[in-house]
Image 1 (cartoon, rainbow, N blue to C red):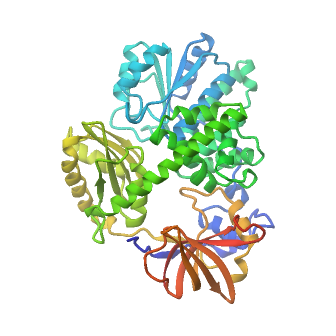
Image 2 (image 1 turned 135 degrees about the vertical axis):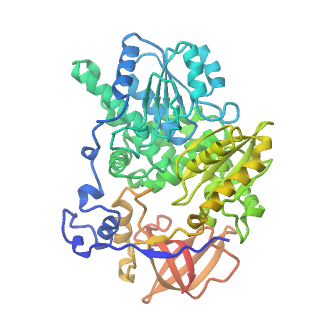
Image 3 (image 1 turned 30 degrees about the vertical axis):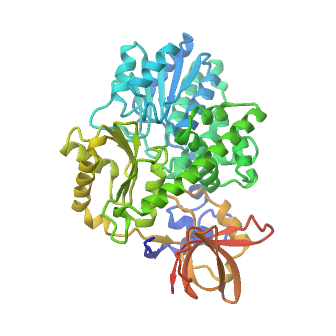
Length: 568
């Protein structure tokens, strides 16, 4: 059912391959990859912390620093409220650890229960927080759309600082300070920061003020928090611009040296990853899902407490619990995806914007279902699950060119009251509907899709870094490509393509295809996850793939991870 994407090879200026400050040991293939992503030389390809943009123009930053300094000086109770995903969990841990390093003595945190409170700082969550007697609420990775919750906090007399990176609506909530680079009129250059990155900038500004005042807090080493910043940034799939790659690179260096917090070290261990060779892919596919699983199926407090812990044995137990929850999440996700594929909107003639739902689905997993279907169909996808007796909770994923949040906002403007709450980005969004509104919403979002059909019918191209000859499909190139970049959203992992002969194949785990490929007389092991279609692979196949070290076999073995194959 997966749609074959057209393969388009990236073009680069060949003269730049031998110019600039490239390391001598970098092969031309790796240089070509970075050039194709807009980087010329090592300083751009692998930026250091010196490449971080200054905080100039970040609205309300000084105001937020003033409020936090006052809270620290008066020993006020600072309560951090976090989103229930990995970005929110890491931002919460960074906030708790960082504020304590900067002199705060009375810091605690709270996180909403997805099933009970829904997303963000809601009036219901505020009612429960009253027992903690906060003086100041600091939101991390949410808040920009929490008008009612912030109004409720104001009614208690609490101060509220919002730190967020999500797109604001037409009006801003009535907070005492709002630090969000997406605000209209904000002149800060780091527009792609994740929630944890915004919070880290706030801590840097707080430390800078302490330095100006000659205070002891000026000596706080905030670089010790960069392991958490890196994990949250990768997990949230924000664009990896220079600033984010600098933050991730610094965090990965700490993790590879075994200097990460006890919780992250335990998560690396239970996920079977090698800390010394940790990559962004390991974070995205192994570490982050285990943290996210707590917020999807259980209580994100478990994930945050793991990231805040300093006792290795206790963190190991928490990491094992997160691993068990993640296994349950994977099984639930696969069942839901299999069921979604049978929905009427998801056949060979897929709707322009498929909307899938089921009474038995879990709202914590619908985002993953939407993501998987989006990849298969190359269409924006909405997936809904019941949230109590009165609501549907939905999550959506999009394709380039179709702005999800704007599309939902258009439906909301055309039919006020149809949508209870919504928020998000161009590529990912969430919303809540009354139970009776789902058919009307599907009709309304379909109308928006029909109006933009020219965008939706264009299958997103699969961008390739070109062809590698058989001699370059070796361990040296595989290791250089793995370690020679901080790959992720907007700065993708290297992908190559070429024609291979399929010499052998077998189905693994009912849905995966393990193959032996041949090219120029040499044979290579290959794996195509979810690649079994029920049909024998063509003998001569055009393969798009990633070249990776084969950790399973060890030594100098390599493996081709197949992304797409078709008859040559």
